Image 1 (cartoon, rainbow, N blue to C red):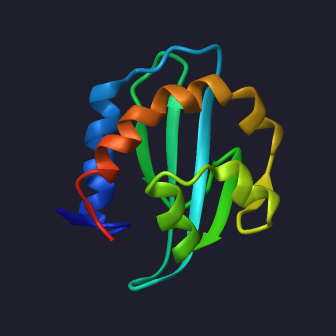
Image 2: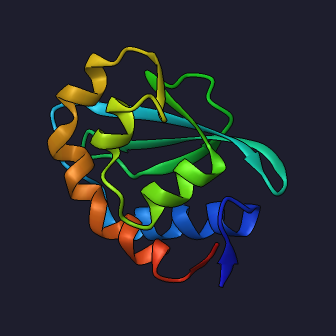
Amino acid sequence: MARFLSDEWLAQLAVVLGSAGPFDSDGRLALGQVVTGTPSGDVGYTIVIGGGQPSEIRPGTDGAAVTLVEDYETAVAIATGTPAAGLLATGSIKVRGEAGALLRAQDLLAAVGPALAAVAAVTEY
Protein backbone atom coordinates (compact mmCIF):
# COMPACT_ATOMS: atom_id res chain seq x y z
CA MET A 1 0.00 0.00 0.00
CA ALA A 2 1.25 3.44 -0.87
CA ARG A 3 1.04 6.26 1.68
CA PHE A 4 -1.44 8.96 0.63
CA LEU A 5 0.21 11.77 -1.36
CA SER A 6 3.66 10.13 -1.33
CA ASP A 7 5.71 9.92 -4.53
CA GLU A 8 4.79 6.22 -4.71
CA TRP A 9 1.09 7.10 -4.39
CA LEU A 10 1.31 9.73 -7.13
CA ALA A 11 3.04 7.20 -9.41
CA GLN A 12 0.31 4.66 -8.66
CA LEU A 13 -2.35 7.27 -9.42
CA ALA A 14 -0.67 8.02 -12.75
CA VAL A 15 -0.68 4.32 -13.71
CA VAL A 16 -4.34 3.85 -12.78
CA LEU A 17 -5.45 6.99 -14.62
CA GLY A 18 -3.35 6.03 -17.62
CA SER A 19 -4.92 2.60 -17.82
CA ALA A 20 -8.44 3.97 -17.32
CA GLY A 21 -8.21 6.59 -20.08
CA PRO A 22 -8.02 8.33 -22.32
CA PHE A 23 -11.21 10.00 -21.27
CA ASP A 24 -13.16 11.37 -24.20
CA SER A 25 -14.52 14.87 -23.86
CA ASP A 26 -14.56 18.06 -25.84
CA GLY A 27 -11.99 19.60 -23.54
CA ARG A 28 -8.94 18.73 -21.54
CA LEU A 29 -8.75 19.69 -17.88
CA ALA A 30 -5.60 20.43 -15.91
CA LEU A 31 -6.78 20.22 -12.28
CA GLY A 32 -4.24 21.18 -9.65
CA GLN A 33 -4.36 20.19 -6.03
CA VAL A 34 -2.39 21.62 -3.13
CA VAL A 35 -2.66 19.78 0.17
CA THR A 36 -1.26 21.60 3.18
CA GLY A 37 -0.04 20.09 6.42
CA THR A 38 0.65 16.55 5.23
CA PRO A 39 3.09 14.44 7.25
CA SER A 40 5.67 15.28 4.52
CA GLY A 41 4.84 18.98 4.26
CA ASP A 42 2.74 20.65 1.57
CA VAL A 43 2.11 18.59 -1.59
CA GLY A 44 1.07 19.97 -4.97
CA TYR A 45 0.34 18.14 -8.20
CA THR A 46 -1.79 18.44 -11.33
CA ILE A 47 -3.97 15.81 -12.95
CA VAL A 48 -4.42 16.35 -16.68
CA ILE A 49 -7.38 14.45 -18.15
CA GLY A 50 -9.73 14.41 -21.10
CA GLY A 51 -9.65 15.44 -24.71
CA GLY A 52 -9.20 11.83 -25.82
CA GLN A 53 -5.52 12.02 -24.84
CA PRO A 54 -3.68 9.96 -22.23
CA SER A 55 -4.05 11.20 -18.65
CA GLU A 56 -0.99 12.39 -16.78
CA ILE A 57 0.15 13.54 -13.37
CA ARG A 58 2.50 16.52 -13.21
CA PRO A 59 4.42 17.76 -10.18
CA GLY A 60 3.33 21.19 -8.94
CA THR A 61 0.39 23.22 -10.15
CA ASP A 62 1.95 25.35 -12.89
CA GLY A 63 -0.33 25.21 -15.90
CA ALA A 64 -3.42 24.10 -13.98
CA ALA A 65 -6.62 25.78 -15.16
CA VAL A 66 -8.02 25.49 -11.65
CA THR A 67 -6.41 24.45 -8.38
CA LEU A 68 -8.06 23.10 -5.26
CA VAL A 69 -6.36 23.91 -1.97
CA GLU A 70 -7.20 22.09 1.24
CA ASP A 71 -5.62 20.79 4.41
CA TYR A 72 -4.57 17.17 4.85
CA GLU A 73 -7.68 16.13 6.78
CA THR A 74 -9.95 17.50 4.06
CA ALA A 75 -7.91 15.76 1.34
CA VAL A 76 -8.25 12.46 3.19
CA ALA A 77 -12.01 13.01 3.51
CA ILE A 78 -12.30 13.59 -0.25
CA ALA A 79 -10.12 10.60 -1.09
CA THR A 80 -12.19 8.33 1.14
CA GLY A 81 -15.52 9.34 -0.37
CA THR A 82 -16.79 12.54 1.23
CA PRO A 83 -18.46 14.60 -1.52
CA ALA A 84 -16.37 17.64 -2.40
CA ALA A 85 -19.44 19.84 -2.93
CA GLY A 86 -20.21 20.03 0.79
CA LEU A 87 -16.57 20.75 1.60
CA LEU A 88 -16.52 23.53 -0.99
CA ALA A 89 -19.67 25.02 0.52
CA THR A 90 -18.12 25.11 4.01
CA GLY A 91 -14.89 26.70 2.74
CA SER A 92 -12.77 23.65 3.56
CA ILE A 93 -11.63 23.66 -0.06
CA LYS A 94 -10.37 26.87 -1.65
CA VAL A 95 -10.55 27.30 -5.42
CA ARG A 96 -7.87 29.17 -7.33
CA GLY A 97 -8.01 29.93 -11.02
CA GLU A 98 -10.90 29.34 -13.38
CA ALA A 99 -13.67 27.84 -11.25
CA GLY A 100 -15.84 27.53 -14.36
CA ALA A 101 -13.45 24.84 -15.60
CA LEU A 102 -14.78 22.58 -12.85
CA LEU A 103 -18.37 23.15 -13.92
CA ARG A 104 -17.58 22.47 -17.57
CA ALA A 105 -15.74 19.27 -16.67
CA GLN A 106 -18.36 17.69 -14.39
CA ASP A 107 -18.95 14.70 -16.69
CA LEU A 108 -15.22 14.20 -17.15
CA LEU A 109 -14.61 14.32 -13.40
CA ALA A 110 -17.41 11.79 -12.86
CA ALA A 111 -15.76 9.46 -15.40
CA VAL A 112 -12.48 9.63 -13.47
CA GLY A 113 -14.22 8.73 -10.20
CA PRO A 114 -13.88 4.92 -10.48
CA ALA A 115 -10.13 5.19 -11.15
CA LEU A 116 -9.70 7.41 -8.10
CA ALA A 117 -11.77 5.01 -5.99
CA ALA A 118 -9.52 2.12 -7.09
CA VAL A 119 -6.46 3.99 -5.85
CA ALA A 120 -8.20 4.97 -2.60
CA ALA A 121 -8.95 1.31 -1.88
CA VAL A 122 -5.23 0.49 -1.75
CA THR A 123 -3.99 3.64 -0.01
CA GLU A 124 -2.57 3.96 3.48
CA TYR A 125 -3.86 7.08 5.27
